[in-house]
Amino acid sequence: MPDQPDLTSAGASPLGRAVAYRSDYTPELLFPIARGPKRAEIGIERDPPFVGEDLWNAYELSWLDPRGKPVVAIGSFRVPAASPRLVESKSLKLYLNSFNGSRFDGVEAVRLRIAEDLSEATGSRVGVAIQRLGDRPERIVAAAEGTLIDDIDLEIEDYTPCPERLRAELTAPLVQETLVSQLLKSNCLVTGQPDWATLIIRYRGHPIDRAALLRYVVSFRNHNEFHEQCVERIFMDVRRQCRPQRLAVWARYTRRGGLDINPFRADAQDATPPANFGDIRQ
Image (cartoon, rainbow, N blue to C red; front, side):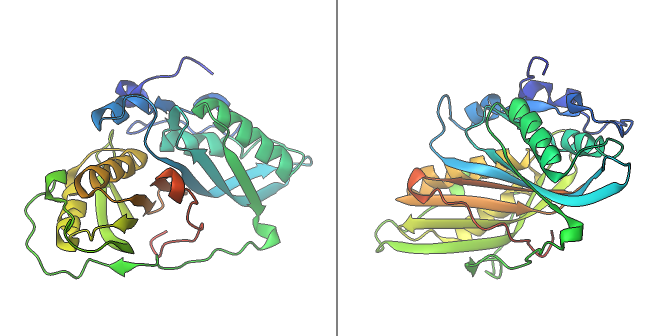
């Protein structure tokens, strides 16, 4: 793997550029990006104050068996939030497509190859699961559990992140609840193309002002950042402004290019990631 670019090199990634598809196995297509620079923007200089993972689901995965017959499958990849690097999404799509014309001995050989390549690219052990479509895997589509806040009637004027709007009712008794919004929209850091997601915030603490939270969620509408970075920004903003005792934040982003990305960040005591169900837009 070549020297890892930092986030200022994101413009050198395949995003926003015409790139020829390779159908022969090419691990060099993976484009890792350092997490550090964007984390520094939100006040994280060293170890982040959260745990979690980036869960990727891949729906366009195929290779050839030893006799040249295509195999089709779906995959899921779990990248630890502690990894020093993330992988740019278009490069992952191109990498997975490079399996299309390559022969492998079976599902396990493909799984091990992807796990090794992604672990090297991200600098941390990546969990990989693959299911052949011929084995008829089930995909559960479900709504996120929690209280939907999107029907609150309010006027909104801010479309760039405004963490100062977040607040909690610090004199009210502690609560434990999960709040959900389907109105999260941000834009790709490189291309400016829209990214859509359902956002889930689970916390224990003084009640978060729901109208203020909804204004804050909508304020990402014109914000340019990768999925993982948006979720980390939201986690840090809620943590600073609302001071919950425990906090977990995750987002289920709409599928693009045969991939959906679902970042999860939480306090260490709330580290169990959510189930891998499909949002209705995935």
